[in-house]
Image (cartoon, rainbow, N blue to C red):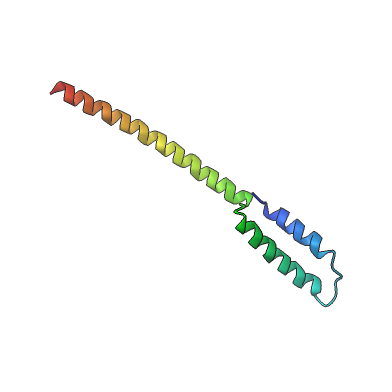
Length: 86
């Protein structure tokens, strides 16, 4: 997982190595940022906010699964009791 501030820091450090002539540094900074973003996406790295969002969604899903399992168990018990009463 990669934090956007880490990406910006890397881009700024690399761009600062280039002399500031005729906007070359800014053009290079934009190019580096695009290249690094693409590389990080290809490696399936997540930003921290994406990771936290997915973690919350997973916790909600796990909670809902537990609720549904409980409901299924309750329904199975009712079916078993109804069959025994017949």
